[in-house]
Length: 347
Length: 220
Figure (cartoon, rainbow over the protein chains, first blue to last red):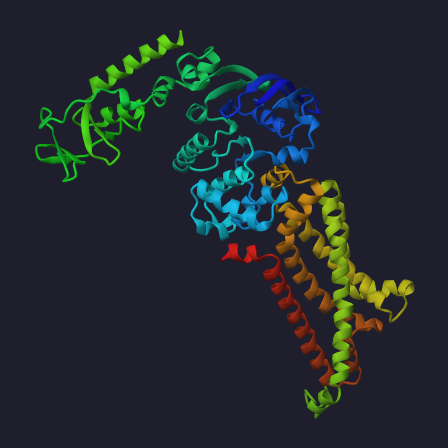
């Protein structure tokens, strides 16, 4: 566990980056620090591995003041991922990943074997191992950055806007990958972002910061979106926070209707495997928006219902076969039910 | 040139092979030892400049001014201190010229390591010296070698001028040829200077392949 006890940072010129932070970061969970630029979130992150030395208070790692540990030893036990990946241009991907194990004194063969495992873990094909960082795409470099941070199996992972510099589609893939990895590895992750969407997607707990590293709200993503602590937090969350909250809830609770031969003027056609093909009206085909109850969120279900020309979202199983439909009214009813339950649970 | 004197007297070349080889070796030493010394000075100076950035502009200005001075004038000015016909008279200015080329390339190379790379290295537990040796210097190698190629070739050509102060490897062939209006040694000198420069350059390209294979692969 990481504990901040009145941790403060005042720059030599007198400006205050962090006024005095008290925060517990629980082990094995993902805690996201989110806030506007200049709120001190990166400074807070860097206090943990002593890239920034607090001018007041202290930071404890599993009960030990990080100031008491030799910097190199402390840092080799903490994974660190940054926005531009920061890979060594002169080392092949495999040797980039093997860096910390080598620093810890592993022999080259063992370090490379470990690095190869990690490349596989983060979803990079084996042939990338021999490449140099400049030969990879931004998204691939970021994956290498994550693999490198994990190489010596550190219990703590610090991530400073690791996915901000890649395009939205790649970012979504990397976020999904991180969720999968974290479910598997259970690291103590402290993640910094300015993107509230990313924060609620990745965080078990989200810490919303305002100026000088003051905590505006600390909550799980759901509570944050449904019950912001004050007008400032609500404004930061944005106008569509209700919609975004739907992105945290499973679509499994939407009641499905059986497939009908016809929906007023509309007819749904399936291919020979039972996958939806077209919505037909007057013989003209239209696309079929679908959602997968087993995997998707309420937001995806609502999206499919809104887009469906017939007004009925088609539910599909893992193989893409149609298993039922949900009308707009049915989806909206499910939203209301869920909302009532959450409010109840929140009280 | 005199009428009737052929451009090249081949038998003269045949008679003087050992002499020409000796001059070439001499030339290589006079031209390349200063480049080596320049490199040995440029790396620590470059490091100092990256650590104390205020140092760089004045230092670069000084060496640029030195670089702008005509070599022959500098040789002559140095004679009272180093003596006529000593190697130092030629090698001291050549070292300054090499440094004028190598200091900026060293600084560029060391600065070419992006800040996030530096920070990532620190965050992984590299101390400042370890990081320098393991990350910053290797990343600067292609820049250093690019600088060395320019410095070596220009030093080889400038060293020929050194013959005018009585010391000079292949440059002596030019002085000799002009004094005797005998073109063969002049042509031999030109060809040998060019060959020496070419061989040096090829060796440096090979060194880059060996020391910084990543630069070539990335450029592909």
